[in-house]
Picture (cartoon, rainbow, N blue to C red):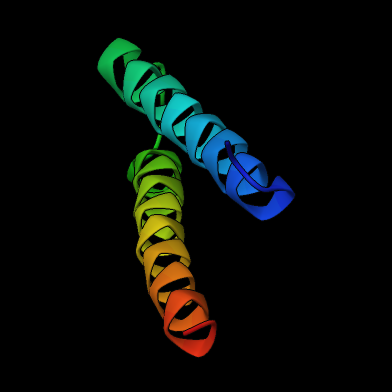
Length: 67
């Protein structure tokens, strides 16, 4: 059974994954008139991936503290 923290993490991870997929779809359609618009979406994807890494680090640190 998941704790409320675990459930929160799972739901956040799902939302982040869905957002990354949405942004990748936006890039595939390529309705951008400037390179800056394209790079902006790429930056959003990179930020979400960084967030996933930080979440994993935070989870690991929290688990080590609870021991």
